[in-house]
Length: 274
Image 1 (cartoon, rainbow, N blue to C red):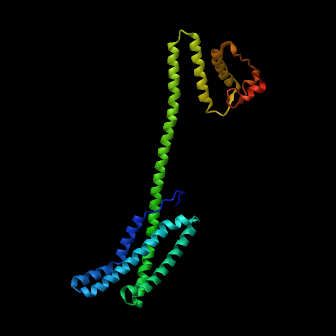
Image 2 (cartoon, one colour):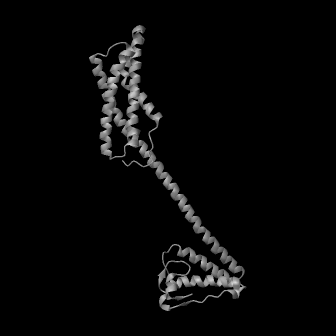
Image 3 (tube, rainbow, N blue to C red):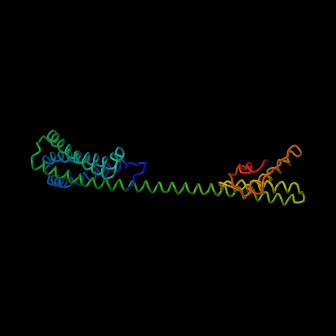
């Protein structure tokens, strides 16, 4: 499964709950035996068993927590190699932790209970921890997949929201020009009897429409640019009157050439002068 660059670790609270539950399940036979001792009233014997049970249970909890942290978070945070190599390294690390914990248990447990660990108990502990290690490995994989899937869903939702925002922004950009053109058309109808004013509004509307349309095109013809230039020149002449004059000399053969929409194309300058 693809691991995104925005890595989300499995929550510590979730790992702790699973560790406590698994430790309780694997200690269940001893828990039942301890319960029976309490029920029979053998309190003196059950007190020693309770200490034994509590010590084993705490070891199981710590072992489960370390294994889950390693298999769900640590290896994905600190190792960015191929998934196959990651799994192999996980297995090796799990076996090393298993061996260390078993040796640590056999060394510390006599200090807790006051009794040496016999061969039968040692073999039973080895079996319990090995089974627990395998179970924890697969549980960690499930937790990792669930967390990645949840993060993927959240990322998809964020992308959807971003797309909606972009679509809304694009819609607003489309609405604004329509509003302006409708307003210009309304203004034209109000000043219909004033021909200079009507002409001024029409030229302004043509300029604005051309700017919007040419923004979506990489190239426009010289003819289209000249129409835009004529509208712009009309607005400037209306403002400055006799103080502004524009002369354009371009061969007819050049009107079909294309250039970038810059107000007056480079292509037009090569064919004539303005």
